[in-house]
Length: 577
Image (tube, rainbow, N blue to C red; front, side, top):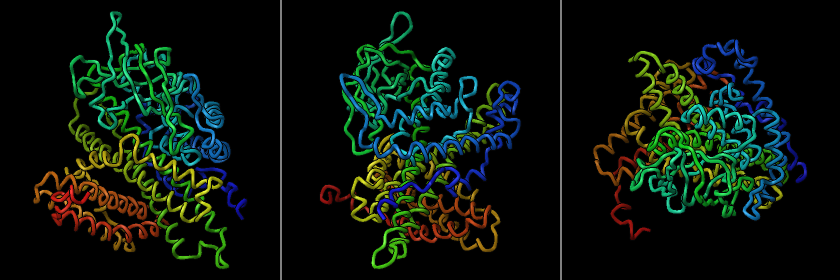
């Protein structure tokens, strides 16, 4: 039985995932794709550019099927050995595990390393939503590989903010896979508090810069090309003194060590010493943190949400396969209520995380499309109002997606290990690796606690309530009316919670309740998204009902506690901790 359980049963992570197939079949990208394709004028210049939206979707399908096959058949089998071998560090040089390098070579040969870059640089010119799907499949195969594949955001940031000379020099190298990238932000004394970054940027007479200092916990810090956050303004102490720089790997950039980590062993995490590293300014001075890093981090957060979903999907598949094969007390353990309840919950949580993350990616795509439509045009108040609304939605759903998906991934991978029993604790089974790989997703690119801080602004401002109303205040089929009523109650509970916080008017209390408010919001958002899915497709109604029935009591509980005014912990913090 054990050998049978270990054998791969999925040949394509795209075509054999019914939930991804549903999302792909219901893409809402017409406006986004038309903008990306310059209203399909690019077809006259590029052979691979689509002639219409239908043509574009067909092209997306071919690429997704290719990605699904490569990840399932070629990359996933490499993951266990990559985990055992890990990245190497010797004499100041970092080398990838053999399987990691092989996987990168496969993706390079398939031209899958530049999803969102424009065609003129060698990219696929795909929407970010498709990139999120691909990221999820990569992560299902090997969570650590996503940390290299996902650094395509470096190229996207260069495209969005750098000058033409930097774009022309570096973006074709990213697209071809000639170089990998890194975003170099964190320092020993400046983890999440990026305003405290001290790495020094010194201007040179020729207009270039040199960088001095230390960075730590840098994913793929051995990259050929990196974006670096550094302090360019002498005497400054906050984020307004920080700028973004581009540098290449060189003798002045020293890798001092790589970290020995709990998981994602295929991804090298480096400590770096900058000894006068030559660098070029990206964009404007002083905008490094305020604008450029925030854009980069938001993209990275959606990518980590997709990574978390991919890892969770892999764990769910392993657990389901094991539960079907493992016989105890003369029947498969899948037949025991305690086990099938766990599996149903795992599947439901993955579906909700995917719905939130894909919607976040779609809103980011839509925001960019609207902004592109506005460039060089006379002011249009209606378009400006729409851009503002979509931007607010994207800013809210990005931290919600990252928070929900990453916390979900830990829960699902641990449940998968539990279903395996003692064997799951052994390295012979994939769930042991998956549970370790999932753990980092709640930490890097902003901890869950930071995502809560980011999301609360959009919740308390009413952005979420308005968005939920747009989803829930519509006509639904009669059989969905009980679920619609449950979603309406969730909106009411959210409004009551916000009113209670406003009435209590205590900043410390509001801060303490923030996590509960975000958990309530994620449940309400997931319920509304699944309800809308059920309206579009009657076959989705059962999944929506399952989640909404479980979510409503949680929403009631959180709302009741938020409104309680219970300050026991605040008033007795030291004694209780």
